Amino acid sequence: MATSSSNSFHARSISLPTSSNPILRRVEECLEAAKEWQAKPHSLTSTGLGHLKDLFCCIDGFLQMAHTQQALCRKDTFVTQLMDDFLRLLDVCGMVKDSVQRMREEQQALQSMFRRRDQNLDVGIGRYQCMRKSMRKDMIKCLQLLKTMEADGSSTNDSKVEKILRDVRANTVATFEQLASIISARNSLGSIFSKLRCSKKHDGGGAEGKTNEIERLDVIMFALCGHPNKELAEDSVQYVKRLMENLESCLTGVEDELEGVFRSLITARAALLNFLTCC
Image (cartoon, rainbow, N blue to C red):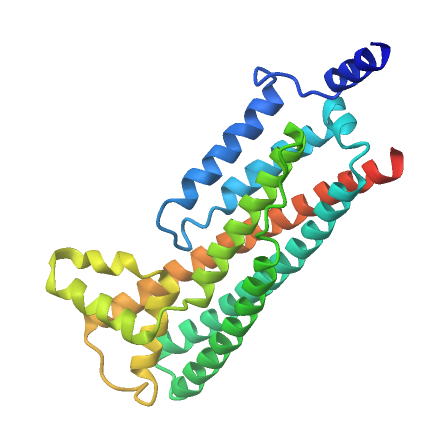
């Protein structure tokens, strides 16, 4: 009976407070927002990184809670695995951030050449297309790395703390998978052309919304390749300028958000390391 009482007391001592706890409630709200985002169409203006940043801001407080620390104190295997996964996510985040920065710089150079109607525009287009080819390879590597983290590994014996942290990892993986897919623009050019042609047959270009900003610029560069100095209608010129300006703004925003997520991952991993060294 004494043993049973002791076990019962121990289980209560590491149980999480109810959802009325503001930190826990905020974590659950952020997780729900991230899950809702995953069911929606995605583009560079809706990457889910904002939700991810909010989630990790909450997780910082969640990991400092005494109940969380007690629940993880004897979970060395789980904490070590989570740390390894966060390290992989840092690698992915770094690769994506470098790719976005490289694309922004190449796009800015191309935008400048386009505005000046530079005679070497074909060289700029070729360089941009080479960069995009390299980016696709990098994003495939990211997706392969993310694939290794998709296994849930959950158990019916998991504590609520473990379930929450598994959800955090799963949402982080899903967000980066979506972002890598957007950046790689893996749809074939034929598929994108088909969508854009369809938009011209209907009012307002609704089908254009089915392609992301990067895909649309890829199509334009493909169309201009080999004929960079051909005369373009004024409305086409203005469209390309607007597209490049919007893309530059999107890429800058994504870069900033990725930097915030990168720092949050480092902070979370450091907190997990403290559990291993202090328990």
